[in-house]
Length: 177
Image (cartoon, rainbow, N blue to C red; front, side, top):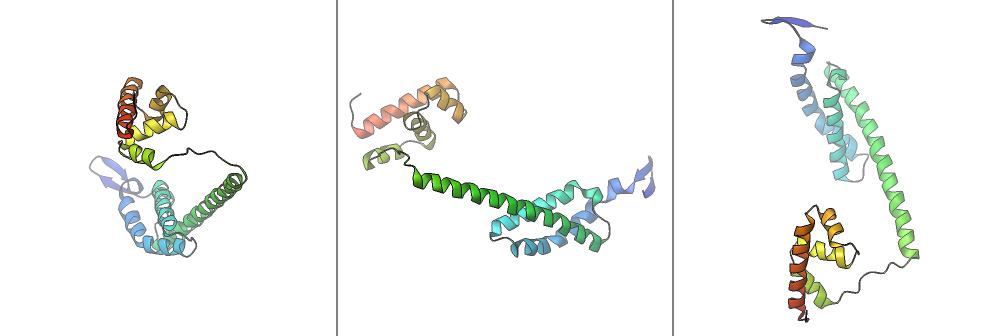
């Protein structure tokens, strides 16, 4: 391990001075890594995510990255290759799960709420938070207390919001209490 003499004794160069050269190497590698992933992945956003993941791994394994620029580049592409395989494997799993779900949805009939335009309009008049609370209770079958947990609010606050939202819906729909 290389060392330099400092005012407080010995200072290890690897612990102090590697961050800046690695940062420079990584900055130079970004276009190459992006090209690598763009040529191998269909989605540009997946490619950008893969570059970010590769850079994150390089930062975490900073001490393992070779000091020479070309060696560091080869090392980075080795990491990128592993990230690519992980990304592809995740994509295959996602696609397989989505395909199985499509088959289930085609074969089984899932009852959805029959909602007329008037009710949709009335629900649209609520705030997003109130609408989600009402829908969790009315359509998904949760209690107000359960919905409060799902939404991360106190049960008493959920009860008050639910009561006000129901009153607004009754008023908007012209129903009697």
